[in-house]
Image 1 (cartoon, rainbow, N blue to C red):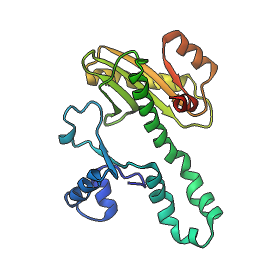
Image 2: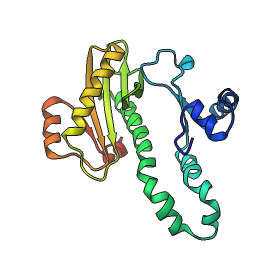
Image 3: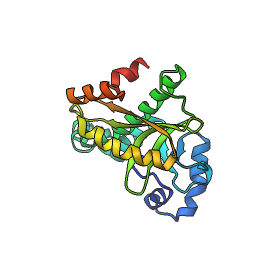
Length: 216
């Protein structure tokens, strides 16, 4: 899981056993709150869904199994700079981007509790189809409103192109959930280009940077 295997079949293949034999272990890890199973927000029966994805719940444990455990021998020999430059640094942004998505979901819950969002969601998660995925989706099935958000852990400010791609995918989200209204949001590590900021102001798109998440 720390290496990116998320489905039951992927995890079983990584361990080297049959898919059905991995189930008791996954259930045990879930009960111990070491692992979490999530399903797309469009799935109405989460327990029965075959689209469940697993992840290590604690970010520190996830980092340890992703980067420390497979390189333990070299690290114990004091080869820390070499391990970082060769095996950690090149993959660190990818690893951190998933944490950024989790923080974005937590931030939306925080805003919902303060009645800041345009509606009160009853579920926040991700959405994905056979081809596309949206990082963060908040749903209120009562009012049939949806908020779709994209998270970018990029070293450069993001521009209108990211928004336009989100708009295309958001329509798929709205259609799949049968929502009447959809709102948009963007989370960016490095901020936003001026043209995107102006467009967001004019259309009511929510923009968030890491400092917003820290402030809650």
